[in-house]
Length: 194
Image (cartoon, rainbow, N blue to C red):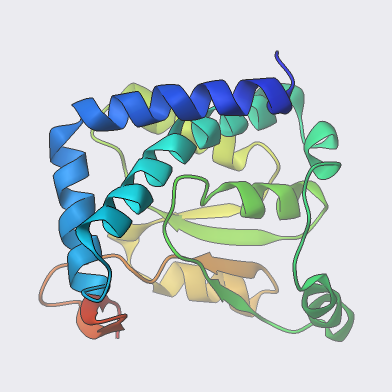
């Protein structure tokens, strides 16, 4: 594999190009940004969308690299901001649920924590393509921890947290009208669990 200093700029260029061709995804991102950040200009929002697509391929390749090569090479390139908070949680043996914003590389921190020996629990949503679903969840499970299907509800996830697993939760998921509650999210609102 190429070193990240060479690979990442190339992937960013390809990602931006793909982002120009991905009209539906680009439109969705633009609408979401206009709702969340109405004070930003169209140009500012376009730059954010371009940067989002630039990081998409980088994140996918990072996941593949983590799955194939293991966490050792990654740990050298990772800077944990707020590590003292994690150390305090670990030292006090406290139950915790991380509320994680959804993004391209959302799984990587949980995988790295699991690789360091932390017991992690997360919820997942099944992918439409069964092959992608199998590969994606196999990579997520590679370093240990528990994965709970969203179809099973939140109770199994909470039970894992009570058993000492660190919860890794993405609150910005819409679970349908009978299970969702809308919460403030920047200048708009977003569905989450009550």
